[in-house]
Amino acid sequence: MKTNLRLESSPFCYVYSKYKIEEMNGKKYIMPEENATKKTISITEHIDDLLVETLNIGKKEFFREPIQEFELLNYFAKYGSFGFMIDLAINKYFVLDDKVAIRDAFYITKKENVDFINTDEYLKFFLPKLNKREINSLIKKCKDVASDTKKEDYLSSIINEYLIYSEHYAEPLELILNYTRSLYKHFYSTLDNKPLTMKLPFLSVNHLEHKIEDLYYNNSFGFIINYLKQAIDISYSMQMAQDVRLLKICNFCEKAFIANNPKAEYDTPQCKNKANVYKSRGKTISRNVIQTEDGIIAKVIKEEIGDRLIKRLNKKK
Image 1 (tube, rainbow, N blue to C red):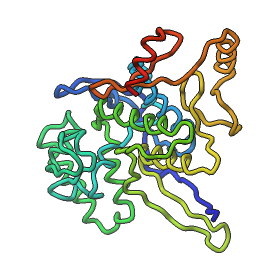
Image 2: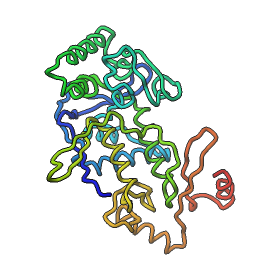
Image 3: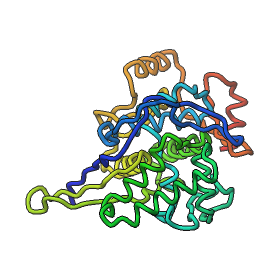
Image 4: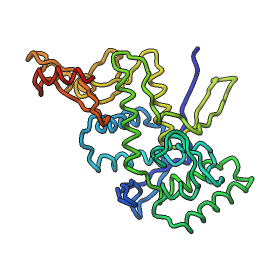
């Protein structure tokens, strides 16, 4: 069955011109710089680039490679924040309720699965610079909008603008790296046509809106994307559901890329040339991934270690 499916960015998505990393309450956060300018953005315009860049941040975290702060700040300046505050909440209009039901609650409350947290505490987690009075004022502001029937059709967009598109909104660095690593780890587990059995806790396209238009003409069905993580998750899901997958991992550098040719094995000509040099010298390139006792994933390259260590590491796989 063929479906005319499209992804459409909400006109109420925003990005700031400059971001910073700041430590607050013992956590490192990424948030807009003071006096940064705010502009609208089409999240879906470069959705393939967005997915690949996200996976490759996760690739570095997965293999414990250094990630420079400027890489994350440039990513945010290009695409904006992920929107975790909205995405992790099960109750869509949580700001109107006394409590927030959170999926993947471990990353916020350190409890497994679903947990409940007071709404003001939840907002404080993502708006660490606001005091209690300011948070309560923000909650009241959202409730006032919800009570205005004239704004009913735009309620989600207005609340998002008050919350995840606010100049005070901040996302913990730990949460960002956990998400991107989980995404790449899941993708990496599918190499060599292995079944998709690995659990991906973050992948759940939450609060997705859709619309059906021009049924008598184009038979078009569209998803409305309201924040960044929605776009990444649904784009990844659609790529993985292709009969012929073009989303690949380079056989040399192990970066994610979207190929023009389904038989492509390398993301750049440089990687292909380097791989050919290795082969001409009789060296082998293979993915050797081990998991340590504390659950950390590490990459081992055969050329850089002795045969005895290779055998010992292979036993641990």
